[in-house]
Figure 1 (cartoon, helix red, strand yellow):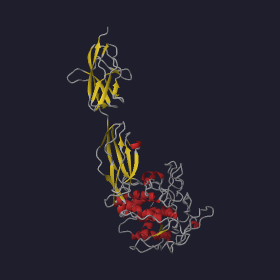
Figure 2: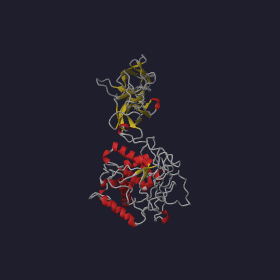
Figure 3: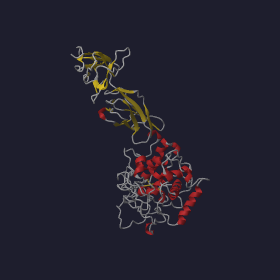
Figure 4: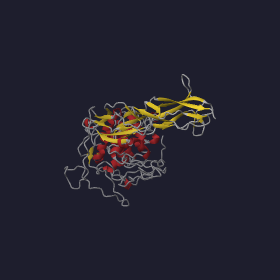
Length: 567
């Protein structure tokens, strides 16, 4: 269990009575026997889900505005209300689109989790006030970073730097980052590319929301079950108070919400516009001036911390889509894709066996097909092909990774794959770029170069006196009548038996230490298919001996060596 520290930053619940009333109302809405806070004994087993000691937010401070006691609508009514109602029920357009897109994406790959977008909205509200009221650009990236305080153990947990400041700009301690407040070490594991731009950015609401969704669904959780939902939220930030607050907003958003323009959402009091997100290291209660108004409208910002002037905001109930000139210029959110437009996976499109000789191109090319939510072909899907494993094989141009797009029939073919000099097996993976969908993996094999013949190039008799050395011995290997370069050759001094074995007498080679050896394996032919053997020593015993040369591919030649008595 994570170390608990100090008292959480708490803003919005101005009295214990208000907080208690909200929680009581929430508790009453739970099904019989459904725990509001999962019992300690109900925590998932280690390895099944993210552990509490590695909470997504590092158990960093959070904002705990409780929702208004008057919910935006009665239970059971439509959640797609017009742009009216309580300001607190309004969610900025890009933020809402990111939550709904995440629900759809996760449903396509982990339907059993039953992730509701309202849970993401509740966590986003508590962690960052919906990305500071929706202050994001057209791609969903926050206009300035949202950072929690340094987790230096002074009122907070102690988490030393894990990313060298790459995400949070702090090379001493970690800070929670982005609209969903991931600590860098957790983001490194769970980060996602939710907007398909090829990057995993914790400051982008699409990326952060998808990462949060995957994190909450880890293991075999079913978030339609209260106990599983409690475990998921506690794994995000292990605090009963945090769970109650998220649960309160979850129920609030389930009763009704509406879309508001980006940049016009309600922010928690004191959140501010700076990169610090208004969080401090203090564990004391906020001063009255920092508390929100009863209607949740932002409190005036302290004059000592002026913030950049945001774009003029429209009223909560704009009169016309083409209305006042002061309306923010953020583009409308991209419509959510239908199942027929969403990539649901890749599959092999008839790729054969991948085998090639070292240095040659593979005759077979990898081909995959992208399919949509109905199982049909899907065009314009970005596919990444990557060569993996200990190999020097590569696609044309020496590239180990290439990205291509599927055609009208949903298929795409990888470039020609060329074998290197390393023999053995490796893999090629095809993935839908920027998604966490399962990859299609192909096994490829590089075999050694072969020769079907090998012969000595000279014809003169090989003779040497005892104690002397033989003249150079040269051989040439061919494959289908062409010079076989780079072919492995084994040389062995053999006996003259019916089943020859290595001879322990007569001529020999020398190893690097000058010791006699009668078998050499680290030999190969040159570009012309030729090989000059290392120096052969005659030894001290006169007689006729045999040297056998064998190539990869089974070609063999036996050469006779004669040792004469010394004069």
